[in-house]
Image 1 (cartoon, rainbow, N blue to C red):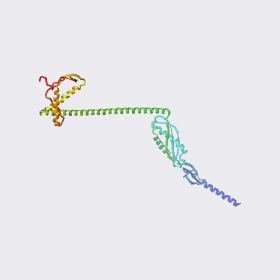
Image 2: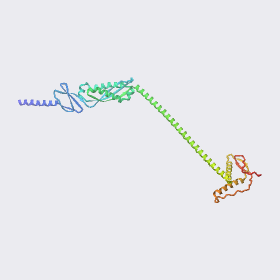
Image 3: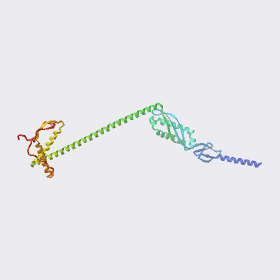
Length: 343
């Protein structure tokens, strides 16, 4: 009987020891840290893994999630510096770095962070104009992050990011902004169109200027070449006249006969080619023209030698021919080389 009672006591002690051991063994999951309180006072922080505490003396206080967490900041009305009312909401990301401070320095950590962020959103956005507010979200996010993180630092919390999700002006303000944007774009289009027209006119004027310059240069070059051609023609005429004069001075009558016959023949050809021809009576001695041609033949023999073409000799007797009917554009013309009938 005594042995049976002793066995019961031993079994009870073993069970008690096992219960005590289970009560003192704590397993902490990854991403969490637990605080330990001894008689209600914080003593230490348990890291993830297997941990031992003193049963019935120590107990687990706060179970803190040390992973990065996100808080949805509710929508609120914000009045800007230019008295425009807008609705804005945001999100905040935070991470607990010191579980003891987060557990014992502030009550309801998430509620505190939400209200702190909302307050600073009103402060930061209220110091800006509406246009600046809509175009500088990065600046707003940076200011909010700096201010909220500094305020939450005593709580053992790191604010990693604060982002404005939406900024919604009232409908009438949105309509006004749309009209303003349309007017601005129309103004910009008119300015661009005016600049394009001005550039086109400038380019056309430049083209006309270059064209006039090139045309003037072409006319100058043409005039220069024409003057050069006339100068060369005059030089050739002067040279020919000089050569004829020298031949006459040397006593060569055939040269003057050639010169006079050439001019005479050209004059007769001009009379015959007149566009408004008329019938004229012009006395002409054939012997004068034949004599001139004989002079040309003599010159050719002197130039080409005896092997040249045979030219008929010029008859010495003058034969008068009857009046010849000639088509010309001028009145009757008398041959200056004709010899009067009485001589």
